[in-house]
Amino acid sequence: MKAVVINEYGNESVLDYTDVERPEAKEEEVLVKVHAAAVNPADWKIRDGAGERFGFKLPLILGGDIAGTVEEVGVGVKDFKKGDAVYGITVSSLSGGYAEYAVAKPDAIAPKPESLDFENAASIPIAALTAWQAMFDLANLSSGQRILITGASGGVGSMAVQLAKAKGAFVIGTASGRNQQFIRDLGADEFVDYTAQPFEEAVKNVDVVFDTIGGDTCERAFQTLKKGGFLVSAVEPQAEEKAKEFGVQGSWLFCQPSAKQLAEINRLIEEGKLKTYVETVLPLTDVKKAHQLSQSGRTRGKIVLQVRA
Image 1 (cartoon, one colour):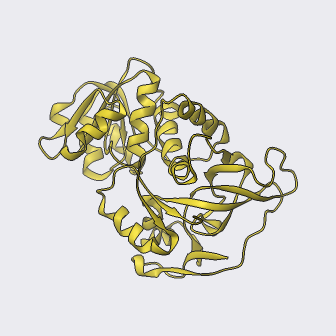
Image 2: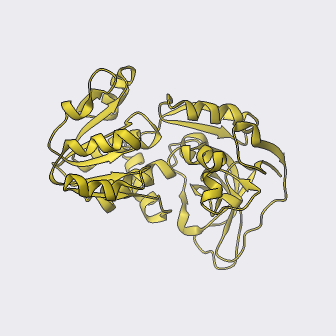
């Protein structure tokens, strides 16, 4: 099969579109014929060298988000059969979505929402699950609470705005000024252009911060929390340690696959409460361009790689 493989760490030039052996579905696994795969910042961070720090072994096939059809099921799989349209998260970077076939666990995939094509479906799993687990599982966001979402125009941020609004929260989103209408249309109650003013001066007394940027942005976001507030970051491993300095709670989230939560997300999609935004669809052969666009940090929503037309 065709796949994008990295045999060494480095910039986008190490992405090699080549032939590799097709994986097989082992016990309690599903082999998916991939139609589309989303690009996430984690992909190019792993490619740049984070994979080595995490102990990954080369060669690697990147890509966690997939949408496609079931090709075969392993022993013990009862909920899926060949031909089912599904979406979700691959079993590991060793069988990533930048390929014609990828392996997934049954508890990491769900039926594809009928209202979405494969490209839009592929844009959802990691972004939506990250936002869900950060805001609801860790920060316990509830109706009526105020939440600040940094990087609200990105793949994770745009999902977070909609999920928080569906929960009944008062949503404040930060991004550059050109994204104001986009974020308002997602349902945000307030918008802060971080290029025009320090957001920590404009926003105070929020119950929850969901940080998708990290670094200095994350640290300044602590200043917007009320006493007893909670900051959860999708990108800042030191969030819990920094929280102690500000006398609040903090946590870092690493997204976990969940078929149960994907089913809840499906329901919101079918009810029209959660919409996808795919800015760019590129063929798998243009993966280097896709990584360049993702690394620019100026993309709304998601970048998706089309594996099959």
